[in-house]
Image 1 (cartoon, rainbow, N blue to C red):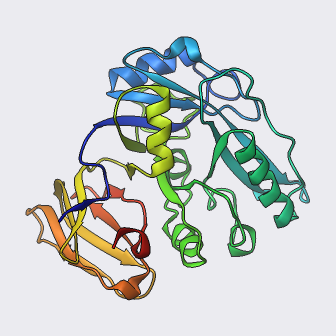
Image 2: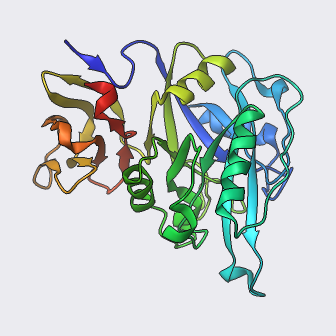
Length: 315
């Protein structure tokens, strides 16, 4: 019997879950951003302007959902040069489209217990919290290793990649998982659009999250996020992910390699020669693996990542 990890039913909706507008330090209005993203097949955008929570319910319609959200910045201003400031950036997504959401008072940088209490207070206020771009934030294990209460973290940040900073957050993600955290992963743009669309340094449309939901409504999209019914991508598509007869199975768009990561050193990889493509793979599951997650890579080097699935929940 198949156990679907990405739901069998529902529709996939393309989402950018990290987006800045003229309300903070972006160069485009929310209306301009909605138009541009919809023209490129997106149905969901979280407008995560810095330290200000502004609902955009007027933008939501039967073809588009605007998620009420903001990005909280907790910086460690112990140096004069901002290029060396370490910081926590958290995206805070409101779980309903009701009025009344506002920012929560932030703690100082150095106290991890206060940071976790801050995340708890955000959750209590009705937000789910995503940890953003630890590499761009100059953070190391001592900063993020003790984080608790997160719903997800960014495994890819397009803007950071264009900045020339390592945008792949797989090591922090696996580190948090291996420390017992059960959290999901998203890919985002973190766009500010200081260059026009089409410019090689424009930071829109490079990292996205495919959300599988029962309908295109605020509640359905948030429910899908809370359940982990999505995957993160730079381009490749995942059509199906399920467990059957002790195997993890994936069906996807044409790619060069499919790689299963676990909590330990054991992995499984399917890979083809140049010019060939894979459209799926099947991997053995060992209960000792603790969790499994899958990454697919196309011939251009673009990747898609599934969430991590803990075996005591899926087998």
